[in-house]
Length: 331
Image (tube, rainbow, N blue to C red; front, side, top):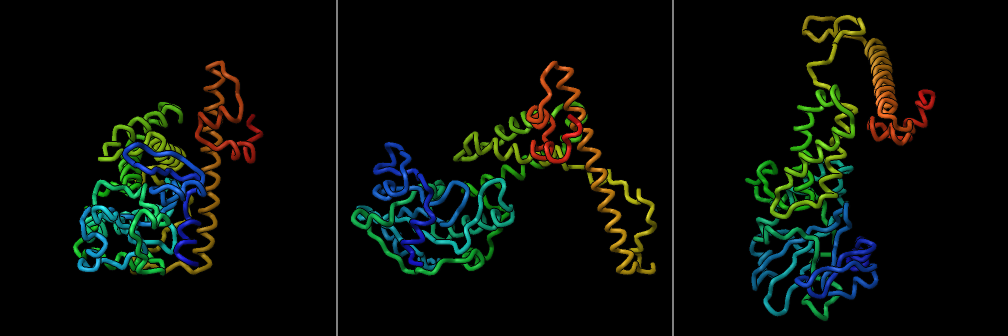
């Protein structure tokens, strides 16, 4: 696939765009947005391109002297020489809270490392780029047509760079950082909240804490903070238990035989124990879920409110489809 075709294919359906970024952005469908000089290059929750803003008169050529990877696209301002340096990814990375955290962290690490190599603007988030299809307005080069893997780009990051010390303001970086900070708060407080309150009050607490943590140079929008908070609150409310609260040996299956002098379990014994353990855990989870549903139903009746699957789902944090499929007998 040609680079131009791939660029058009990976654009959002209705990207932000502008002919003068200082005057604000507008939203247009893809065909109209391509007529503007600036536009949004990545989809809202999917990153297919790494974009860097280099504010130097020789920005179009400095990457070579700095031993950076060959850009897929260089878009230069003809008036001052400043340029956007763009790299395409073979496999896009999902940057939403539903995406895998490890690829997001890896992407953030690479983006921060390459920004240092290119001496790029640290305040630039990569949301809006110079439109490479407007070669009548910008000076354009495409030195490389082959897209990059994350591993290949990582090879160009400084050898001393560590992701844990990165202070990136990229979308993936801010989302990951907020998620990590918020989950650590949730681990410490969810058990107490579960005893004394409802899921809705827990969600409000986590969202409030997430909002107070949103102090990045370019803050996340409230909807992004609320999305991260909702993911953390829901998972911890339904799943989190302290490690030291596990009741090992509760099934009475005997010693795990992990010591050096123990007679090791056979494959058959291991599978039997795993099967029994899985059955025990499933039954325990079902009992906990039923207890949460009954508690929510009781609370609604106590408050004089109508008991519906939607109201119970909101109060208990259990999805309405799960209630309909497995627990209709409780209504």
